[in-house]
Length: 300
Image (cartoon, rainbow, N blue to C red; front, side):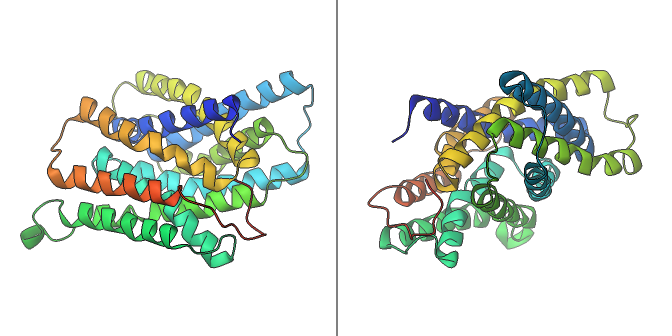
């Protein structure tokens, strides 16, 4: 049973994921180094969530188990997050959004392989439809005969695969007596810490991407959205499981396409809409019908 509280977090998470591809594209267009984005947002969100958690509960101590969990989550998240930021300037945001939305299907594949779920015809059909959606998207971008397949778009498939590992770990390894605010704070803080060396040694603060103050103010504004997203994500992942949480893509994908269309324009041909339609069918099949979870599957 989904409570109004869970549904509110679900909507917030989906809308943020819908905004993300366009936000990342905007940062890429300004030339903001991805290390700066990860470090600044990670540290700001981590400190803010730690203060919120402490003021709300009166508990300021972070246990070693939560610290280990948050650091591992941060490492697993930084990999697809950094790749997402890198590819945002090379793959149109609508196409990137569709690729990332394959994450729920990869989560189900992982659940089958590990025995967390039992295979059903409907779910297997969902996986096949999801990959057909991606195939249509990849094979119809540009002139295949002269330019070949868009390998930037193909490489973007690594993002939902790695996010799958991240979501599975986040759901399965939730530490005892942890709360979502503490977990989100520690993960965000470690995410920023891991990016600091690259921020210092690879790309300096005085880059060539325009008025520094203005662009860092954009990151500060993004932090406010990230705080809501992290609270929503860790609340849902701990209380509802990875399978439920990833269904926020139902909201994210149409929102991402619409937002990218408004801010970046671009060609929206019949193949793009066909790919999006196939993806929505795949998500519906993946989450309809009778579920047959194995005994060891995380709650959803």
